[in-house]
Image (cartoon, rainbow, N blue to C red; front, side):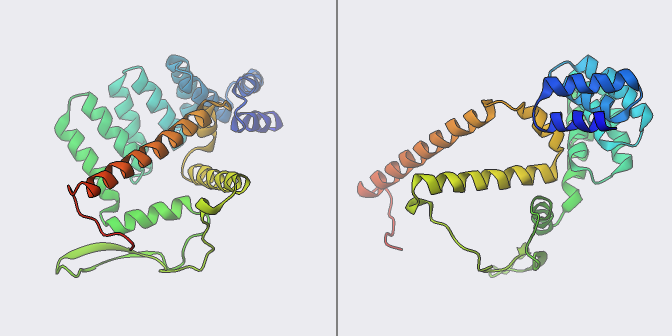
Length: 262
């Protein structure tokens, strides 16, 4: 088991080639080791080697037929291989285990769409939506998933709005007395620390709601993802400046009216 834990650690830290070798070493000693089959299958799927992923994962689910995570990756591999009927069968197996698995309900609808069973696909999408019919609850459940410590007053309610129409609301503290930071007044060092803290918090939220091993493997430990985020952030800031300049120009030329100094 120590070798398996070491393999998982390598996987979680993005050292994919070493993790692969470690999983293969575990399987050489025990060809029926479920976690090694499952996680090596996950790596193969993310590398685009879908047939190898299928072979590994089909063995894994024979060992643990009710493992939603292994079934989910197996379904994805089948979908990549265009084995749609088999993928649909696996989706049904997962839903039988967990009828509220939103990812699988959505994927089932996608598979049905690709099979051109459009009426069934629409019904499947509706099933996914209906897991949380109350929109306030949908928001609250999402917040509870991603936040390690959430507002104790968080909740949802349906009530009459000021427009005389019934609406769905979510409830939270109006003011929680936390410190507010002003990035516009920060020096570069402080802004860097804030960015790192925000990135860590976002990464932790994703790790709480998804498969942290899968996320780590997808990012692959390189700089491609962080570079793409850097480019997007700069492009987004530039677009904000262009949008504001266009708005100010429209106000100045009288095309629209705006109230300033609020």
